[in-house]
Amino acid sequence: MNSILSIPLLLLLSVCSAQTLVEVLRQNSATTLLQLAKTDSQLFKSLSTFKGTVFAPTNDAFSAALKDGDRFTQDSTTDRVLKYHLIPDAVFAGDGFDGTDFLVSLNGSDVKVSGTAKGIVVSSAWDAPQANVVKTSAFTGGVVHFIDQTLTPPLGIVEVAKAAGLTSLVSAVVQAGLARTIINLKDATVFAPSNEAIAQISSLVNTLSKEQLAQVLLLHVVPNQRLHSTDFATSALLTSSTEARVQVQKDAQGVAVSGPGNDVAARVVTADVLASVGIVMHVVDKVLLPAGMLGGMEPASEPSADVTTMKGTLRVGKLAAAVEGEGAAGGASLIAVLKENKATTLLSLVQSDKPILNALADFKGTLFAPTDKALAASVAAGFNPKNLTLLSTVLKYHAIPTTVFAEKSFTGTQFLKSLEGDEVKASGSSAKGITITSAFNANTANVVSSMAFSGGIVHFIDATLTPPTDIVTVAKQAKLTALLNAIMSAGLLDTIVNLKTATVFAPSDQAFAAISATAAKLSKEQLKQVLLMHVVPGKLVHSTEAAEAKNLPSVGTAASGQMISVQSDGTTVLVKGGGNKNPSKVVVADVVVMGPLVVHVIDQVLLPGNLSAGVGSIVALNVVFWMALFIL
Image (cartoon, rainbow, N blue to C red):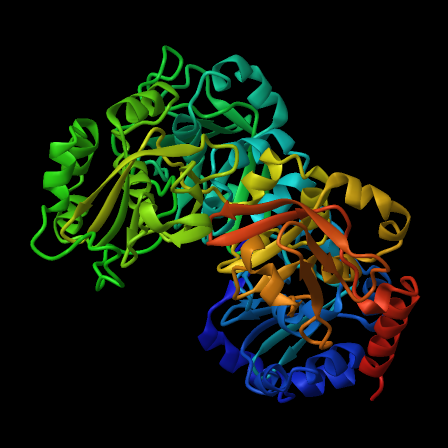
């Protein structure tokens, strides 16, 4: 039975009730909801003209939620939580409803409503308590359903997957370098393989390259469609993120899903798991496979999906400086220099990407050019040059625009911004040799020869540079398990993955173990404050610049005016928070990460000043905040 009334029927409701929404809430003693709404003046003002459905938690429901700090927190109260209770432009009547509907809330995420013999049940985030409609009242713009639980807005898809125990899927996403792509999904349907499903094909997964694994995972994503179990017809073909079709069939046993390479269809074992924003996840008991996967899969030549995020655009700037006469006007072109030095493989790859070829024709700056032997070794190790998206990213990472990095006059360490957008680290000296460092754990490249061209200089290197991956992948590679778990627990995964131009001080597992007793007492909000203290936004502070940095504002301390203290004697870098008795030492410096970010691993967790006397001060501040919030 359809429960959604069209907006013209609001006129009928307005006849039945001449009371505004605010008047109905006051009449029904929904004082807590009104007080919380008042903390956001714009939101409270909009309630006077709101048209649609309101799920209004009772005062008792709010009291219970406030005791549960993990579900209801200070920063999410007015904007995220309250807007999730508002369904604009749709009136869910409720009377006689005996089915299931999914309503789009004001914050963009779905709310699930189900009719039962006992009444209407409203479901929200994974594992959040269901709310029961205890009373319904009309107002001039629609209807208010009073509920006995606050609704919890869905978390991001990776956090939901972890909460649902889909650990193998989360690991595969990170391994494929897809964390940022998946986290930034909006309005999509995801068929999520269970741990058992991935275990069934573990021998196959172990043979896949990073790009092949990404192709498999993206087959499970249907973009731009929110498809709930109620939307599946008897049979349908859906277009996945890889452009391959996924077949869905609905029968008496439920919903079956299969990819082009599946002999046996997967079954949906848990349907309609909601994630933000507008993500619908269905857990399936088999992995969906591309065509030919069971018999061995050839690398995709040109995947449609954005497997490797491309940042930056092809651009040619003015030459910053000509060093020691290198790159003087009238010299050989870059292409001519590559030909002269028999960089045939690199030239062949460049010529397969016309935008790159056109850019290099007038390129000004520095090019790190892998030798034929270096590129052959990369292909043997799994680099697929037929993947044009990946190829373009890799080639752009070897180009440093507008800067001439001259080997003859160099000594020390320097960080260069590539055309791809992320940093390349150069270190050494002209006397002992120059080494180039790229992604974490990637092979270091040595400069074997150099030659000037009309726009700058080419350094020929003996290994292909690997563009940095996202911070979650790097943390996993560096075995910063405790840090990753803390980020997940604090609900900060989206924030951390989407960081741009920032410095991160990353505590080691041993650092977290040293404060395990204190950490166990922290609420989610306190843990978030501690973690954000390790992030310095808007600055790339390398170890070579630490001596000049001295005091840095972090995300976690900016509001309070506290700073992170940085000291360096040229060899050792020490970092200290306001709540630390002793400084932390940087044990691994200058890890370049996609963003661009620079990460330094440290041996102590940085603590805010209000943690120096224990967790009581933050708890007290939270209590004061909530007491003030409830004062009329």
